[in-house]
Figure 1 (spheres, rainbow, N blue to C red):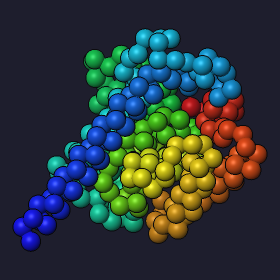
Figure 2: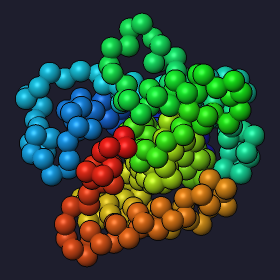
Figure 3: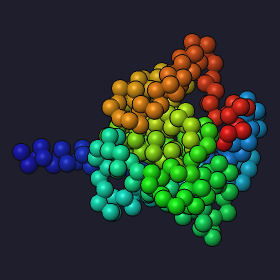
Figure 4: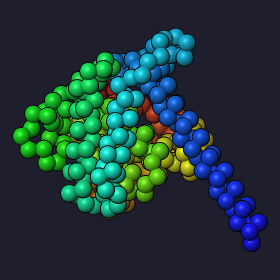
Length: 270
């Protein structure tokens, strides 16, 4: 019995170490990806200046996308320290408001940081300024009175996929952080799918990051989110349907999926 217990402990320790290593790798790759693609918000998906970018072609710097992702995690850590477990987040409107405010406050703190020289996006800065000026900060989305499709919200979403929460809670966190700065449900839906997709890659639920398989898996995640019993999902139904159609059309055509926020009409709303 003692020998079996030791073996079980060793296996568990190895699994934990392997998971921690994968999380660390994700954190580094998120930051590197942001650094390599820091010019992406100003170009379309078809322009070669981004597609042809290599590690040695530019100075690598910590970007505002990386910093905002870290702020997103810091907001959750603050909530945990205040005693919030986030259980039932997907259906608790009061807790959702608390979480949104925590995200907005963390982003606002970063925006005012005297050491912040990373140029947070204009949409995000405007939303945070409106939030800061609001007399009653109740919902946490007072500043997001815009039609932005959510580029910044989606770049923050992968970090949430590393967290050990239930699927409805991860979906909720992704949507709530998006709602603090971006007002279009398409951005909220894309953030939710991105978070859950990263979580599945981390946990081996999808075997390889090849585009056809990822698109198929993303479509499955859309179905999963659609089935979640949450008011947050209900306001995204049409956009979830649009995301699913986009994934399906790209798979059938065998062409790369064009992210909604890189289309010319979307770039004006970032």
